[in-house]
Image (spheres, rainbow, N blue to C red):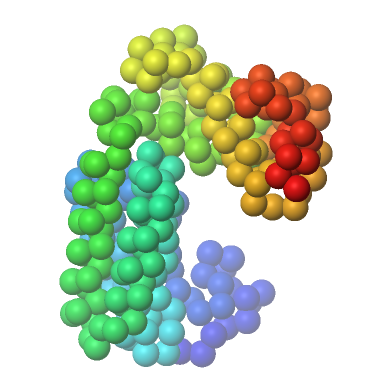
Length: 237
């Protein structure tokens, strides 16, 4: 089916006419997956059936492979955000995306996609945070997904429809540190990686991680790691 000019169609159905699952469906599917259910796969399969005349590629097999690559990418990031070990999640993603390209028909792609989601379920179940109750898991996932934004305990609690005092108490009891400390530590961990792996200036890193000021970022970093970010960058030069 020939692509339609984007300005002539509903913004939700641009270019190819392909209809994606909604963000809410995606969220629900991911949460179900983290509980060991395959709802997300069923959603993708249903959506591919709905789109049987408007695909992500001219050939049905290529379209199915593209859909599954998108799904694997979303699931990989969701499992990382929920506490999965990043290196393991990315390795699994790389393996299955490569294997997808070798499959000769749609049935083989479907089976491989099921195997992939089952492996991500197992990977998540083996992650170190699955011992926590669901509100804590959701808080951890939210913090990791929004590290580049200004983020306070009250913001996390509001997103989860919980009272800040209740969430703070539960988080501290389960994790062994306050939620505010967890947010600060997670941001500083990213800052450390950016200092090591990029050429971004200290000022740019502070702004990227939404610190109120460069001086606050520097104080927090030195308190955590014993050196200011500027000194750390010079040490690594």
